[in-house]
Length: 215
Image 1 (cartoon, one colour):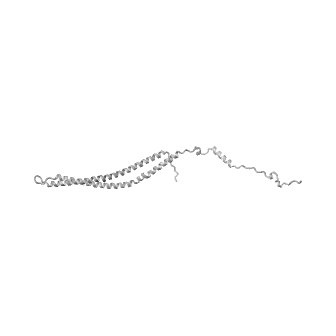
Image 2: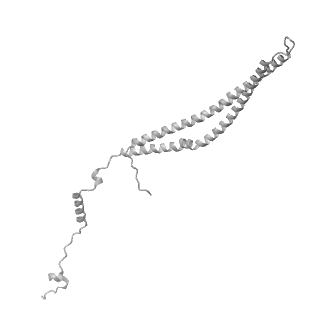
Image 3: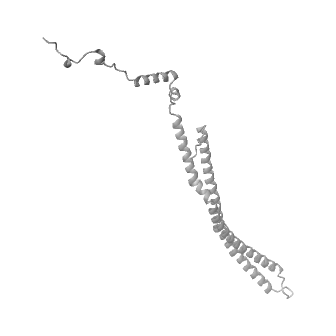
């Protein structure tokens, strides 16, 4: 187990970092939502607007092509004042122009469908690519922000506790220690009791062994 200790010098720094991390989470979420929204809007615009636009253009240009063909046919049926065939160069140009315009509309419709398929595939790849970042923004980083908030609250509670007395931390003074040692030594000493004098030393004889003098 590591014996390293955290060197926390400022609770304000923790709070500032937590606020910065929260701002990054908000900005990241907004960026992901904006990018996905742009893809969705583009696909929706192509599908609902451009597809309809080119379909209408195709119908309109088909009508113009039909009209150009009819005008060319009528021109070809006419005869000139001299009995010859009337000139139809203008009608032929109009027909060629109508054919080109119709082909352009058809290519536009096909290109729109191609872009819809491509963007739909890119949207799927994009979601897969940003999935780890989205998970971090939705779960991992908010959890880290919660831990930082709890850390700050615990440090605030710790710093608000009253400081212990300096004398208690430093221990007893030299005089107090000497007095304590003397008191302990005196308590442990047992007072010696005086021995009663031995009978032999005093020269006395027990009363039961004394002989009474003859009367």
